[in-house]
Image (cartoon, rainbow, N blue to C red; front, side, top):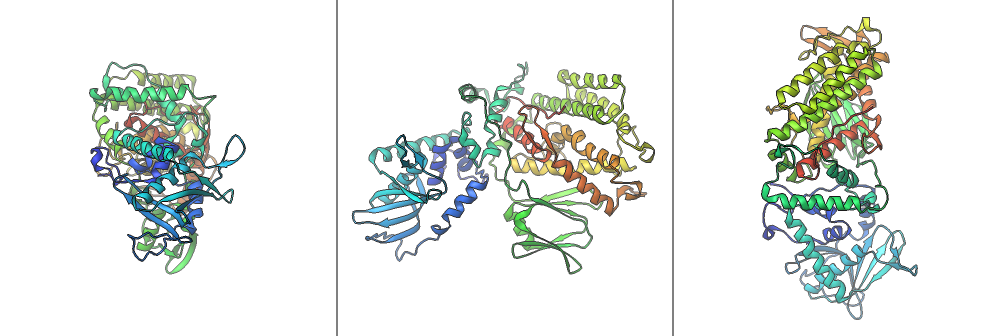
Amino acid sequence: MSDAPVQTQAGLEAQPPMPVRRLHNFIYCPRLFYFQWVENIFQENADTVAGSHVHRNVDAPSKLEDAKELGLPEGAKIRSLRLESEALGLIGVVDIVEGGPDGAEIIDYKKGSARRNAEGERVAKEPDAMQVAAHALLLREHGVNAVRGAIYYAADKRRVPVELSEELFAKVRRTIEEARGVAASGRCPPPLKNDARCLYCSAYPICLPNETLWWSKRRKPAETDGQTQFGFIGQTEDAVRDRILEALDFAAESGKGPPTLEPPRPEHDDGEVLVVQTPGAQIGQRGDQLLVSVKGEDVRKIPGQQVRAIYCYGAVQITAQAVETCLDLGIDVSYFSPAGRFLGLLRALPASGVDARRGQYRLFELPGVRLQLAREVIRAKIHNQRVMLMRNGDVPERVLKLMVNFRDATESAREMTELLGIEGNAAAIYFEQFESMLKQREDWKFDWRGRNRRPPRDPVNALLSLGYSMLAKELTGVCHAVGLDPFLGFMHQPRYGRPALALDLMEEFRPLVADSVAISLVNRGELGPEDFMRGANGTFLSDRGRKAFWEAWFRRCDTEVSHPEFEYKMAYRRMLEVQARQLWRFVRGEAAAYHGFTTR
């Protein structure tokens, strides 16, 4: 069962009291409210961190001799007062309540500035004023009459009064009912329409408002197989589906001016990746620092807040304290065998709710849906293989035309076996020409008759195997992060321990990321034959070779590339997440089709 406070599969009676801050979210944006209260998805950004900083002085609760007695004589002050009302269905924490001559006054703290009215006077923003009114209603339920309210805006360094009128209280009550109705519907509201608030919203990397509108409108041609269009939604729910699409269409068409697109850049986007590959090394913790030591000697020290991920290669240990810190800070710890095979991932529980996984499980049981998705990722993969040959190789024109034919043939594949046959033929031609993309070919003999692995028998295949393993690792983590099950795919068959969905999603990125890293290492002279160890159990990189590989891998993942539809630039690493979030929308019914990632 989901950890989210609201269980959408149950009735309204299962809903707990709504936090007042979620009511504030609903007024700001119903979609943000749904993400945070229903699906338990919360994303920090600079604004939320700054908001927490502003509250640091009022978050320490005052001591009360008797919690049931909120006597507030004139001059008395209570900080961080937690209140709950079953009648209102609300729970909240009031920053400060002060006793006055004729009643209590509520003061709420906000990070930003007040709004200016037509006369240029500072007035409280509507969500902030309604939050104060909600707190006043809670106080009234506990026998305290709040006669005044105010908001301290930290950017203005002053209080702005809030008039606590009966009209405002009635509006709060109506809004509570509306918010609970949205939560009970089990349907995520559409995004705001080209609204500047989206650019300041912490949920922007998850919501992707304008991308969501585009994906919802950019529908594939009508299919005869009804499974391919919102197949997981039963016929009885068609009306709900139509209302969602109508709302999305309305939002897209009624926006003023061209949509504002902003590359999603979540927290930890610029953090460092810590790679530890020395046998016997230990990762520990000292204060807020992560510490790498070998045989008792400290070799690396780095603040935990600056680390985005840790890669443990071979016999590397990590202490329980360091594990706890990594889970708390959201640092992924990936484990690889000495040969580079991805073994597993340590990460905190996924933040997302269960709606996406339920849709994934239902959709991926439908052959028509699986074929639709597989067609698109294979089309994108063949397209990108052709781009690689055009950029780096010396191939005859007839080969490029053949690749175009194979790419276009995916659209009409009627069965999965036919599609995989097309993919296999395209891959055979691609790897036959792969050697033409390598300089100094005499030193880098490549067995083009087929990829070999487990173990790889030559250096180029060793590089490709390591690159594909890394790509599978990256996408396994991304699937977890966005709320998809990485072990249930639409093309690769389920098998214990195999991240089938990650393998599906990596198809379109194989040539552009993993193959590109191998070609770059060879052509830039960053690796030589001496950096490989050859034995009866295969060909593998030496320690020095692995270090060169990591550097090239991170360089490629941080390379910015233009999105094929939205045109903004972002790193490949982040593009993986955008594609996964697009699939996340598809299985939730917010996108009519999945569009593969291609480049020119």
